[in-house]
Image (tube, rainbow, N blue to C red):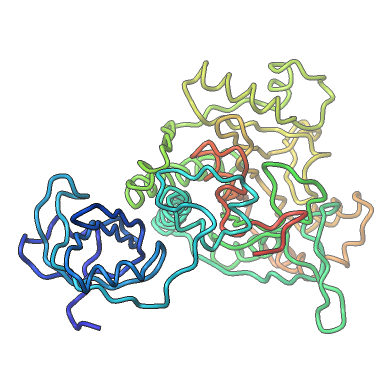
Length: 432
């Protein structure tokens, strides 16, 4: 291999015509004409056109079908018709591996028309398609924005165990694993740990996997997903938590705009405008608005869609917070609404008519936890390690969790969350 520094495809428009450059990437496309062959090379930043005329280079191209990795050393030449206005001429082409097998889909086409099962079965290859890869680039930029916003607000990033001794949320579905001869569970969320760490750092966040043994197969659920978790201390109530969530979502959008602008263009994603204050509606009023029975304990997907349309129409907002969910539908650690304990100091954030975030204020007094767990028909001793923090003084606190894949799916208007998940795990899929 040459010792010349590698040039990326995106850097070629800034190169000086006549300069020698070294490219490395995949053969994206070959176009053979009577007098010339065009090789389109793809790397992580984009595409470059290579003009092939002489015998040795032509022989190399003929031995390099699409997706073969190659190195190209050639001369930068101006050509307005080429990507970025430049192309590579007089190339020396070296195969970096044996010729690639024919890919399961034609990755050189502008869009993928394959069925979702085909895309998922061949994910290690189909994710190479520029438009497909762009979807995860949106997710990656989202995480950058998420982290940057919270770092600037004095939060500490933490990592919590994914093997746990008990379920995080009573009644939820959990995966049981053999942990050195005794049962353990894959964590449904870092909820217990992030609360305990508020007693250490005051403000914490985590980016990590969460596991739900979902017994159904829907377009919006996964058995394993990336959870963006936040917890903060010394709050007045859930509205303080919602204010932080608003800033975090704005930071996520800013991250996508700053770090993934080409991916936004390739996917056609419409980035939302995050209002200075997210509109809020109480759960009871939301039920009345959508014509649901007043004793309904939760919002159905069609209710969420109707509320999303109402928020867009009445507030010009892609976001709507529904607060005050019934306590019977919230975990035991949820703080009730003062004055009317039927309702909770919690909320769901709807994004374009789909539940994106669940959050709220937590209990923080040890005696309240003992009472709540007992009222739930459980023994507080079962939660001894969790309750330890509260026995030693915890501030009023709250938090929320965002599903990264669900957020990304809504950004690109994907019909199925699996379309934006690198290697989805669900009721039926454990590979690739």
